[in-house]
Length: 183
Image 1 (cartoon, rainbow, N blue to C red):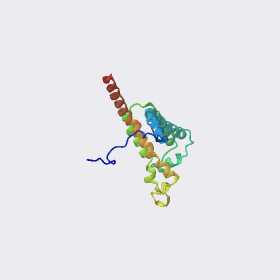
Image 2 (cartoon, helix red, strand yellow):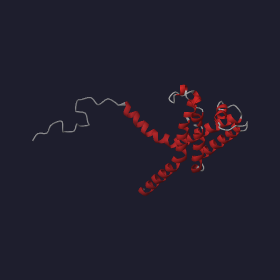
Image 3 (cartoon, helix red, strand yellow):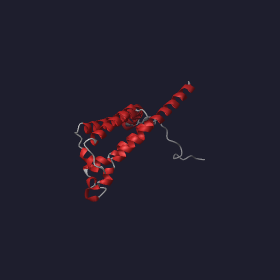
Image 4 (cartoon, helix red, strand yellow):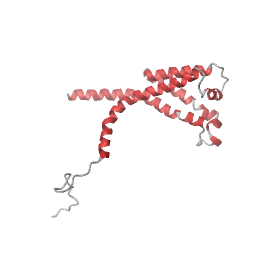
């Protein structure tokens, strides 16, 4: 019985007298990325929490000091008459929410509060669509519409930082326990 050369696996070593395969830089850079990714991931949640909290604090302070470009939009969208106290109060609430995010405390309570606040910003899309959409087309966002729709990303970040830490801690503890039992 003869064996076809197509069935025999090719040798990984170069044949005698042939050149060695060329260096594959893409494989090497992928290897570097694979080594770097866990280090970056380790700091990613903290960076996301700090940046989200920083945005809330920054936007809140602008409302408190009366320099927020969104203040008029907030007042125009409200279904009730707002006095001069409302925007600064909202600003203080945003500062508190930002500091709460940065602290990482009471995440189970922070999630619905932050979600409610961010979902409230979508009122612009419903209550004043002419401000958010060009030519009444929901696919053609105005600058205000883009400003509001980007809150979907903030909302996703809030969900990640208020829920993933518990899972990450549990996974880390399980991995640490596994390494202790092997030792």
